[in-house]
Image 1 (tube, one colour):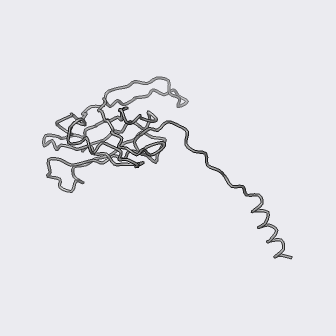
Image 2: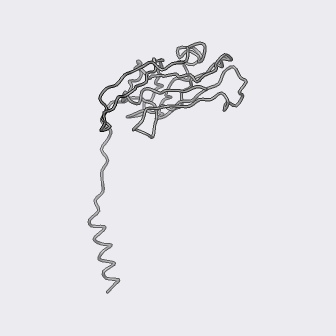
Image 3: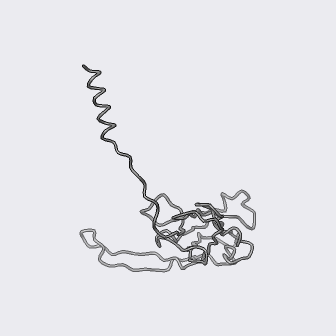
Amino acid sequence: MRNILLSLFVCCMFIACEEEKLEPYTGNDTVQFYTTNFDEDIVVEYSWGMALDPNAEYDTCWIPVQTMGRAKNYDRYLKLVQEKAVGWDYVYDHGGNIVDSLSYEIPNQAVEGKHYVAFDDPGLRELLKIPANAFRVDVPVVMRKDPEMTEKLTLLIRLVDTETVKVGDPQFTKCQITIE
């Protein structure tokens, strides 16, 4: 009797199951920084102390970029720009609700040419791309060592549209790099 009930249960499970068909992607083909935490801004920590050669003049911080949509059979060139990094201070009421806010520019921001190589440098062009038929790539931010640096620096970068690629969700097109 137990075997009959078990067989009946297994048969019912197969009958109740239905194959789920995946619909093809129909959204826009875009790029954005890769993240697994969709609840927070993308922040990367970079430390000269962790570099393979801490005494080197240059080092590279690799930032993952992913595509959304279909792969393309051609290279898609990316464009990075620096933005001013801002922070927020909030005022709360007694119930813990935000009642006011104030934005401020984060101090000690990285300077192009002094703390990192400019994103439009010709030597970076071939590295700032998603190769044909690829979905994900790590793009370089080439750091320049500043011997006078005594405090942490902030570098806020943003992906922008190009002729070959459009950017995706604005929340994931910015990446803040903290340099120490």
